[in-house]
Image (tube, rainbow over all chains, first blue to last red; front, side, top):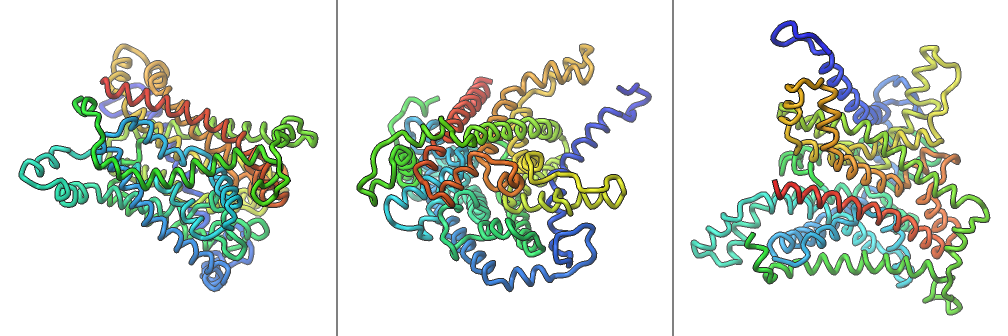
Amino acid sequence: MSAALNKRPFDGGRAAYLALNLLLLGFLLAPIAIVIVFALNPTPYISFPPVGISLRWFEKFFAGSDFMNALALSLWVAGCVLVLSIVIGGACALALARGNLPGRAFLTAFFMSPLMLPAILTGLALFQSYLLAGIGRPVWGLIMAHTLVAVPYVLRTTLAVLYNFDRRIEEAAAVLGASPARVFFEVTLPLIRPGVFAGGVFAFIVSFDQFPVSLFLVVPKGETLPVVLFNYMKFDLDGAIAAASMVSILLALGVVLALERLIGLRAYVKL
Amino acid sequence: MSAAKKSRPSPIAWLIAPALLLFVLFFILPFAVMAAMSFFSANPISNPNAYLTTKHYVRFIDDDAGIFHDALWSTLRIGLVTTVVALLIGYPLAHWMARMHSRLGHALALMAIIAPLLTGIVVRTFAWMTILQDKGVINTTLISWGLISKPLPLMYNEFGTVVALVHIYVPFMVLTLIGVIGRIDERLEQAARSLGAGRLRAFVEVTLPLSLPGILAGSLLVFALSISAYVTPSLMGGTDVLTLPMLIAQQVGTSFNPGFAGALGVILLLVCLMIVIAYNKILARLAGEEGLA
């Protein structure tokens, strides 16, 4: 409660409000900053305050064959998931937005539901199905599992773009004599491309960081990076984990910037 | 609208087929298998002596060892505390961002909220371990300042679990709330203020009630996510915390009892399904209101 002294008085309430929110943002970002500090700190265990800067943990991470195999597998799986979820999710979004399907709201909620149901249960259910089918735990099984949880992201970003653009552009092209196929390839597709790509970027990161779905679906010696890190962390907390984490954070940062450029982050402010 | 009248699906509708196939084979079917397995004594394909039984559910309900009910309660308790704290942190942030006029400020704040969201759960849990452990950032700092002589027990308990879970799920709360608060007409609050209400009263009597559906939706989302968390409670909780997802992983990994794991899965699934349906109802109602306006 501040008295109005002149045109723009110092407003205690506003200042406190701003300070509070900056503090909360700090709470969100501080842990990430701290990981970076530990990744560069040369002491053999996690200790604070840092004593220097070195790249030894990055060397350990990039020299460890366990880490590198896991990283390679994670990148391969995420790459496959990226392609599959773009195709499947993009097609599904088009069908939902343009297909005149009955029960569209229900179908959309249905295709979004892997995001809401516990991921660990998706992993468990697939584990039990693969067990019952007697197919073991193949890598393609893991890829399909990740695709399932990645498709909703592509769906969301593509639908956001589809609902936002002016359908009259398509109608105009049709009126001017373009065939439906030509309208699709020359009008619709270029317009939704950013949404689809943004969804693909999301799909990649969701797969790369995926833990709960992977947990029951990986085999020993064939684990993805998050699973290897998790198992390592149960016994050992050293800078190698911090270095691996930093690699993952840099990737996430790249993704955020890519998303901002592709469709703008505002598209995520609706669920 | 005219689209509602011509209800015949167009050929584009066929594009839904791959997604439908994926979801039937790798989503519906597996969950059906999980539910079915929870009623079998063993794998019915490899073991011819397997029989139908409710023993897995009876085992959970009887709870002879006295751990299953505790696990269920601590899962729900951790979920509830996480949700309340995430709301207390997420609401001011969402309100601030929804009312922000600077585009740059909005974009930067949004990045700060989405960047943690895109960092893996394992990585974020690791970050909290380095902060909260005995030799972590907080304890070392407090000891070096001479404020405490031995480390505070910040980790390997429910406290550490909740702190990390809140950090992981606050972005979901914020993203849900920004949309809802952003839709509330700012002039309503201004009208209340010009009629003599203080800033606080205008907020409590105008903005807060109007954002109630968002609060509910965001809370349900965070609750559903945090009761199904596995990584964070198992790394941050130590031996102090046992949640339903951890119990499920134990049954699969060490006890190799997929039937019982399935039963636990069905129980967790039912809880989450109820929450998800409520969440979708609220969001659908919100969308409907927007359509009328």
